[in-house]
Figure 1 (spheres, rainbow, N blue to C red):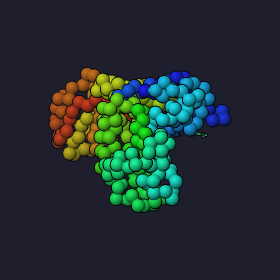
Figure 2: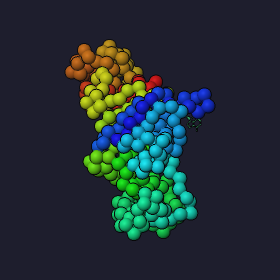
Figure 3: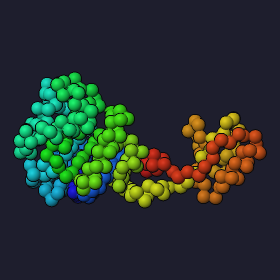
Figure 4: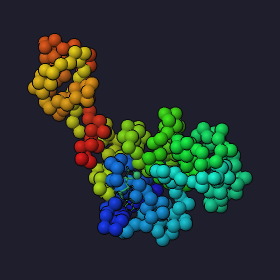
Length: 298
Ligand SMILES: Nc1ncnc2c1ncn2[C@@H]1O[C@H](COP(=O)(O)OP(=O)(O)OP(=O)(O)O)[C@@H](O)[C@H]1O
Ligand SMILES: [Mg+2]
C-alpha cells in the first residue's frame, strides 16, 4: 500500500506537484491520467525515492521513502517512463545483480528470470547487450527488472507505451495478475481506454494536483449522453438539421448531438429519413472517458 500525503515538489520556483494526496490500496490498480507535464512522472519519481519531496510524506507499506529509503525501496517495483540501463550489460547477469540488491542469491532467481524472459518474449535475445535492445524490448526488460525481489507495490510509468499489441495484452494481463496477488499498482498512461480496461479508479491530474478521481461506477456513467449518427450520404445541410436537436459535432465520420436529455433518437432518425438521408447508424452513447478527460483538463 502506498499513501501520499500533501506531496509538493518544486523545481526552482515551479510547482510540478502541488499538495497531492493519493492512496493506492492493496489489490488495487490506480490509473493516473494527465496531459504532458501534469506531474505524473514527478509524483512517481518522488514515490521511488529518486527525487526528494519539497514537502509532504510518502509511505510505502508503512516505510517512509525519505527517512527509511532502503527498506521502503525494497517494497517498490518501478518501470520508468524511459528505461535506461547499463548499455553493455546482458539481461540475465543484470537481472541477477538487481536480485542481489534484495539479498537474493543468483542461483535462486535463475529459473524465475528465465520464466519471466520467456513470458515477455525476450528470452531469444538473452545474449544480446541491452544497448541493442529495441524500445519495446527495453520496456519488457524493465518490467522484469521491476519484479526482482517480488515487491508488493508497483509504479508503472507509461509502461504500455511503445509496446506492440501483443505486448500490451501480455502486460495488461500481467498487471491484472499482480492485482489478484494483492499488490498495489499505479499505472500512468495516455491510453485512456487502457486505463478504463484495467483500473479500479482513475485519478485525473492537472497542474500537479489530482482534480478528480473516478471509480468504476463513475466510469459507467460518465457525464451526459449524446446521439451518435452516421449517414451514407452526408452533405452540407445535415449540420443544420441535426442542430435543431442540440449542439452537434462531427469527428469526420460520425455526427454527435451532445447533451440530449430530451432528444429522442427515433425522432432524429425520422427527421433524417424525411430529408432523404440514408441512416446506417444511430445510437445513444455515453460520453467517453476521453471526452470527459479533455473537458476536465482543458
Ligand atoms: N528536474 C526538473 N527540473 C525542472 N522541471 C522539471 C523537472 N522534472 C520535471 N519538471 C517539470 O515538472 C512538470 C511535470 O513533469 P512530469 O514529468 O512530472 O510530467 P508528466 O505528467 O509525467 O508528463 P508526460 O505525460 O509528458 O510524461 C513539467 O513542467 C516538467 O517540465
Ligand atoms: Mg511522464
